[in-house]
Amino acid sequence: MTSIENTLAFTGEKTEKTNGVAMPLPFTPPPNLGRTLNIYFALWAVCLIVGIASSVLCARGVTDILTVIAVVGAILFGIVGVVVFQYLILYQSWKLIPADIARTTPGRAVGFLFIPIFNLYWMFIAYAGLCKDMNKTFRQCGVQFRVNEKLGLQYCALWLALLPAYACQLAVDILTLESVGNIGGIQVSLLAIVIVILLIGALVALIMLFVLIAFLRAVKNGAIALLLEQAKESTSPPSERDDIPCTEKERDLPTSTIIAWVTGVVILCLVLFCFMILYGTETVENVRKKAERGDVLAQYQIAVCYMSGEGVPEDKAESVRWFRKVAEEGRSMNAPRAQYILGLCYLHGDGVPEDQVEAVKWFRKASEVPALKFYFLPEEIADMKFMVGWAYYYGGGVRQDRVEAAKRFRELATEWEDARAQFMLGLSYYNGEGVPEDKTEAAKWLRYAAEQGIEEAAEMLRQIEGQ
Image: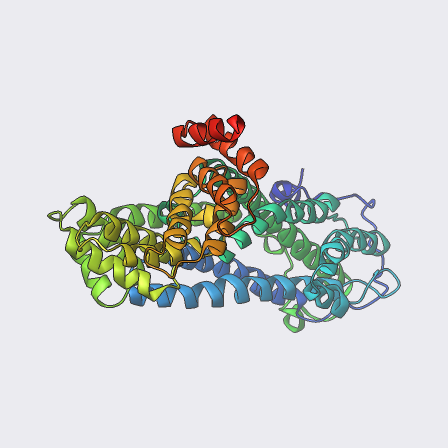
């Protein structure tokens, strides 16, 4: 086996013998293509490594200035650099294929990849089709080289397999769930499903990265192999074609180089991960400084520390002060939980004088945010909604409104099957408060509440049935 066959084994490329007969090329490949593709491939690898490192730092948010640098680095290198150089390699490779063989033009091959939804189909043309058309070109030109046609197909299939992970990540971003540790009362089953899908997506992305490296490397080597064939047929002196690699060693990057790049990426990620672990244990003083500079996440964290006495002396009043800042800001992911906790503090007089009006005010704000299930446990949601409904029923902290109270009790009784709400809704129907008087409807809801252990509901139900 020749050296080129050994070095290409990693990518699954193969050569075919043509009995040593060199066939004339039916076209002239673009000049300097070999050097151009080598440069693009090297820059793509550099952008990939820097992009991964920047993204890891960006996700951690080490410090304010490093966060800004990481965001810029992730955008410039992780997105622009990798995508641009990948598409440049794709574009230049399509330029290599004669018009009578190519199923599309270089411009369309790359340009149509930017069309949403349609690009899910088109990538099979741009990537998998490129491998097939390149091999047709090699056969027509008598080049002893073949690109593994499965690489393009595998890359496209893996990209499609990533869509569920992308969908989960998009849902997380829309719901502003900044980190799993700060989600609060998110339902464990749903969170577990999301995490599993994201982990599977990360594994698929890693495999896809290896396949993409192999694909780009195979396409680049195929282009250079064609240039080698052209160089053999050229009558010009070597000094006039220095841009064309003239040895098998120069036409390919050794497998060891690819392995070294991948190993470097893995080691870099591990180093950054260890750095995050070591640096991630921030002192309370550092968190306080961030909180004083207006960092909403730090404000929430320092409030929790003072509430639980973790790292600082327990101070409910100081905790309430920081929870209030987060609750009043209202836009951060932690705002709903801060509003809920603030309501509890006013309800029970923890750190502030007991004030039912303020408690209902903050419960009401917390209960009106979208996607409650992602912020609170079911019992927390039920408590908030019942407190607001109870306040409307009795006029505690808000203007008395039995109609609004019945509406909120109905929602809580039907969607959450809360026994307290079922009892209050039955009571409303029994007395005709906020709803038309209806003993049958009252008996239905009182029965539901009695089945969940509400003794008052069972007593009222016996009175209705005895009438």
